[in-house]
Length: 279
Ligand SMILES: *[C@@H]1O[C@H](CO)[C@@H](O)[C@H](O)[C@H]1NC(C)=O
Ligand SMILES: *[C@@H]1O[C@H](CO)[C@@H](O)[C@H](O)[C@H]1NC(C)=O
Image 1 (cartoon, rainbow, N blue to C red):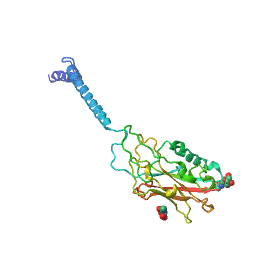
Image 2: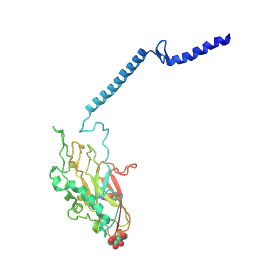
Image 3: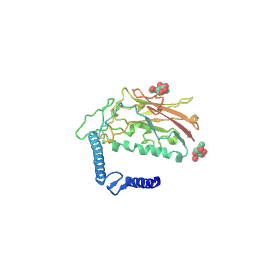
Image 4: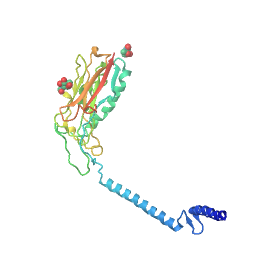
């Protein structure tokens, strides 16, 4: 008897397992009726649409508050890095072999195209020695202070189109990275020195490596579209005794509040490069 009672029980088990997928008597699928499933789907549909809507709305509101001209979040104005041109860690060439230095000369020449008189005449002659502060104007664009190539004298590429490379006295350009709103205090200048036993004469152009404060502050890519960075050039007046040696040259921004001796960032307000000239 027990066995006859067992059979229907196991049958029922099997059918209840199947019923849990689909129960033909009640029309339930996975324990729910079609209308119950429809309600759940509808709920999630509405719920996710609502989430997507919230996301789109907050993004839109946030974008509305952003200004193309001024970055929104700036906790403090950082110090700029110093960059050299030709932008290589080691400037090495044979002064008797133009093929070895034409690339450097070309880099300098193409970089300085923006500083041609033709371009710079469109810009302002700003008052010297003071920050060139500009109020917001109707169209939001800012004026640009002109910087002319000829202030780089023997490193301007105008009098010596080889920038000193053919005579073994190479010119190197220095520029500070642009930082929006930066207004250096004091009288900033760049000082380059070579770490050698016999000191190397390094003339700086403009005189004393001076960076005029008129080129600050920078108002950003969009507002200050044609902004030109002030440059300093140094001419490494090497002599025969300096050839075939790797000389280390260090340049720093001095005379101002900008940082130039950060332990962790060796490009903050300073730069070190090597020069090796042969003949
Ligand atoms: C530099 O170039 C000159 C002329 O091409 C060549 O005579 C001389 O050996 C070169 N010097 C070195 C160190 O390669
Ligand atoms: C440039 O730096 C060198 C080495 O640090 C220093 O001896 C020299 O006085 C500095 N020149 C100026 C003008 O600051």
